[in-house]
Length: 397
Ligand code: FEO
Image 1: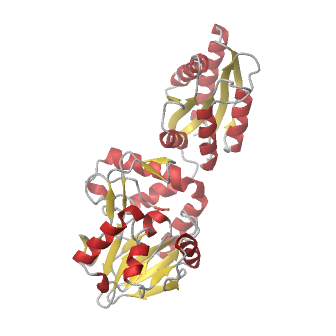
Image 2: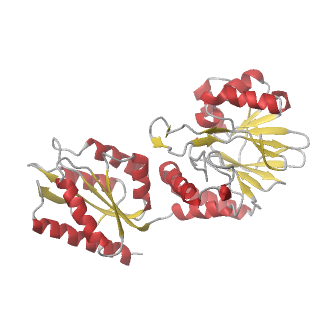
Image 3: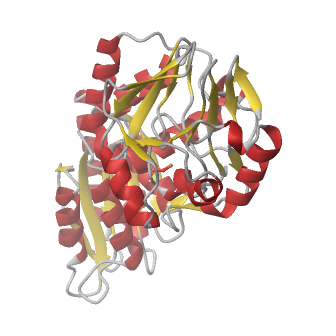
C-alpha cells in the first residue's frame, strides 16, 4: 500500500514485463500498471477497481495482508474490462456480500464476462456514496473508452479517479508524473491517447467540457494505468482536449512497404521534397516497425503519405494491417496521398488512396505510380510534390 495523500492509497500492480496489451494489438515497451485505489473514510473504506486476472492472487494477498478483506465496505468498478476487473472473481469469492458499485452497462458487461450475480449497486451521474468525511461522486463517461466507463470524484479530497482516461502504459519509475522522465512520460501518454482514446475524441471533448462546468476542485488525477498527475493535474486534461481536436505537429509520416527498394525510392524522394520546406519527414517502413508506434506517428502528423508495391493486384500485408489500424483512429484534419511501384498492373496506389479516404484523410494529390524503379523525372516529380504538399500543410496552419 502506498499512501498518495491522507486516506488515499495505491494498492495496484506494476506489470514491468508487459510488452503487449489488448492481446497483441498494442505494444507497451514501458510496461504498464493496473492502478487500484483504496479510499478510507471515517465510516467506510472502499476499493476502486482491481487488476488483471494473472495478478489476482498477488493483489488479494496484498490487500489481505495489509488491510484485511473484511475491512473493505464496497468495491467501485469504474470499468469492466478485464485489466481492471480480473481480480473481482477472487475478491468476491471471499467477500460475496461486498456491494459492487458500477453503471448499469457495467453490470451488464461484468455479467457477460464473468457470469456471476454479484451484489451490484448501479449508479449514474450525480449519484454519491458517503464514506464519512469524504463522498464519492460518480460521473458516467460512456465510450471513454467502453460504454460502461465512469469516473469517480472524491469530494473532500479533491481527487479525480478517471479510470482509463489520462493514463499511460508506463510501469517505470515512481508513482507521480512529476517525478518521471518527461520525454518518456509524454511519449507514452500520447501513444496511449492515439491508440486507445482517439477514436472517441468527440466524447473526450464533451466530457472535459462537462467536468469544467461542474467546477470541481482537482488536486490530483489518479488514472487506472501509469503515473498519477499531482503537479498541475489539469495539464493532462488540457492535453487531452488538444489531442481530441484536429491535432497536428510539424511533421509528415511516410509509411510504406517495399519489395525491391522501388517504393522505397519513391518514399525517399517525397521525403527530400518535404524537408526542403523545413518540415520533418518521418520515413517508416511498415514491415519493419511497430504498429502502435506507426499509428502514433500518423496521429501526430499533419500529413500522411502511404506507399506499397503492388503484390498480386493488392497491397502488402504490412500496409493492409496498418491501413486498417489507421481507419480506427478517426483522424481529423489530416491530408495525404498514396504512391507505389509495380511490375505491371499497379493497383496498389489507388487502393491505398481509397484506404486513406476511408481513414478520413483528405487527398492532396496522386496517386503516384512507378513501373519498377522510378526514372529521374518521376523522382523529380515526387520531390516537387513532397515540397508542395508540405508547403500546403504549413500554409494551412
Ligand atoms: Fe484499462 Fe479499458 O481498460
